[in-house]
Image 1 (cartoon, rainbow, N blue to C red):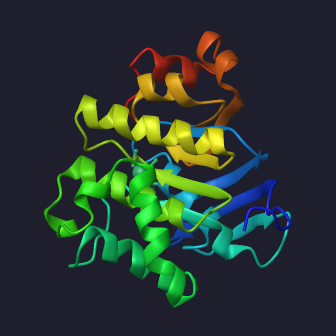
Image 2: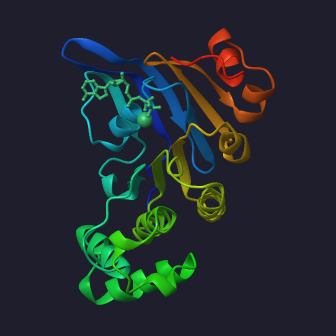
Length: 238
Ligand SMILES: Nc1ncnc2c1ncn2[C@@H]1O[C@H](COP(=O)(O)OP(=O)(O)OP(=O)(O)O)[C@@H](O)[C@H]1O
Ligand SMILES: [Mg+2]
């Protein structure tokens, strides 16, 4: 699927979202080019999750636009949530189900699910009930499930915020593998260490606005805004 016309770059312009007359996301604009890891940073409630949901098409913007280079590519971006949503069936059956929902022909589903589990060292969990897996195992399964759909871009919302350091590193290793394979990643995280380890590009949110954006190296070395400086110093809590 990745050899068809690219849906990237993703161009977000003047993006706004309001609820009950209250602006929650305002005038957000950025471009995600092909490849690399873009990290959304910012305090609680700053609009990171809403922005990811707007980009993935789960919410409709009240202003601005989310434009993909190639229209009709909705199935080429996938999303992994903070708390994985698993069906009450085996780990492998969860992937098979996602493949069915993604329109993959029945005859290939089993094999693709098996490959996805194998690819990420999850084969031993294949027949276990997905909901009984540990948080870290479920999150790795959720990422493997998203990978099985061969997305060109993967959105992740705090994929390791509920995991211990060991499981977090396993998730990060998976993400590095995906990025090395050419999957473009766009993720929100609270974990500054993780952002430093993974980010190529940083989008820094503050109170529903994109306060600052740029290459990760420059952002961490010399943030341009007082808000980002305070956030990196652990001072900006809202
Ligand atoms: N459907 C909604 N209706 C009303 N308010 C909402 C809705 N969804 C989110 N909000 C509010 O919008 C703001 C931004 O929320 P969002 O979830 O994007 O923040 P976030 O940056 O992801 O925060 P966190 O780091 O805590 O996950 C918050 O104040 C939240 O309470
Ligand atoms: Mg959030």
